[in-house]
Image (cartoon, one colour):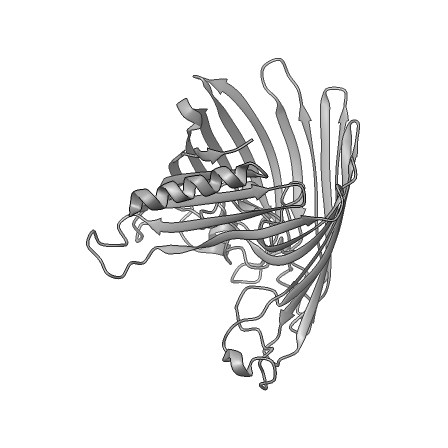
Length: 420
């Protein structure tokens, strides 16, 4: 029976491949972590955490002259969370992506379904692929891409299933969206223009959030992202401004960053600064002045130890990040070295009402990566936070304890079946 089924599948794929391109690929990515001060400060009363989390994916891609689609299945689990012999298991298996894209013309298409929305440096919109589960949106996009110009317009309207389907359309309160931490709706436009030595992107994003009184608040984010190559220096910068309201509170926040990458005979060196606004302790208004990079890949910014904007640890403090990044070829691979000096993005007070120093600490990140045979990738990393009195005041914990994080990850990404 199994042999007959496999034969039928192969025959079907062969027939389909005569008219379209089919690609089946997979990914297995276990990552082992040793956490001792990851995301926030630890102290002597807490034990380090050691665990392995694994992502397993199966991708099915199809494309012909009129449309293409992708279905990606995903399983996320911690090693050992399910017993060897089980009837019920605790892994998280679900659809990672499921979308179709129809081309009205070569340059104009519509893309609908569960998908990654990721642009530019992923500061505000990113796939968050460092996290094993990633970030996905259920949305519809209009895509216009003639030559070096790109224009994407996106829409989403979310609903949950807390009201039975038969009464869903007309039942009182059926439209109330109760999924925490997510938007009820969004509309956005992203424009990108490429140049010979750089690019410019503009973003306008309107997100609606459900209030407890059944009303909806709308927050707008506007962004400009640019890069320019000047001789041996690549300059890049971004600016985002947030306005609107959340739960009846006015929003007035911003993010601004700039960096330069210098080519040297040995290694490229990137020097930059990023300021993300926070809320002063002395500010008694209800205004929200702390910028939130809501849907970005935050692990790629402000240090790999995820002290900022990954979880609620930083609150509304904001951050100013002075950083230096470089990389070296080493033993058939590459060693990345990043250094961050973190300061508060607002004025904060101690328990006695005195203003704290803005310096929160210094983080050093080391990541070594190497391509192995068959396209297998191996990475190993170590990060350490040297915290200040201000960090200890804001986060508790013990700045005198050794705050570090170590990890190793191997990624297998084979192509199982492919047609030309």
